[in-house]
Amino acid sequence: QVQLVESGGGLVQPGGSLRLSCTAPRFTLDYYAIVWFRQAPGKEREGVSCISRSGYISYYLDSVKGRFAISRDNANDTVYLQMNSLKPEDTAVYYCARRRQSLGCSGSLAQNTMDYWGKGTQVTVSS
Image 1: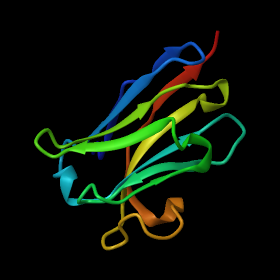
Image 2 (image 1 turned 90 degrees about the vertical axis):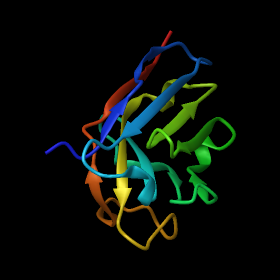
Image 3 (image 1 turned 135 degrees about the horizontal axis):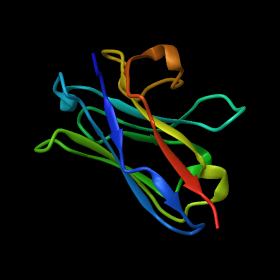
């Protein structure tokens, strides 16, 4: 079964912007904290951003602070990752994931603290 679905990836020039979307076909996304991860070739998957169920608490990887913004639209049951001032090192497959219950955005965003995953969307930043 499809758990989460990412969209919005693509090819963009350095300095450009993309907005990724995460939706959940089979459950109500706005009940959960949601985390965006990324994985570049040959590198570990890393947590990029997290948004709490309420939307009031968020987390950002240091390297994306000031450039990326996570948000959620409960009316549309969607979580977004707005990515601005993109750099080549942002190139990766981006995944959204559901955080296990009660954890919110607290603690380390280890992969094993997630329970549902999407299949990913490719983001390529290149001139």
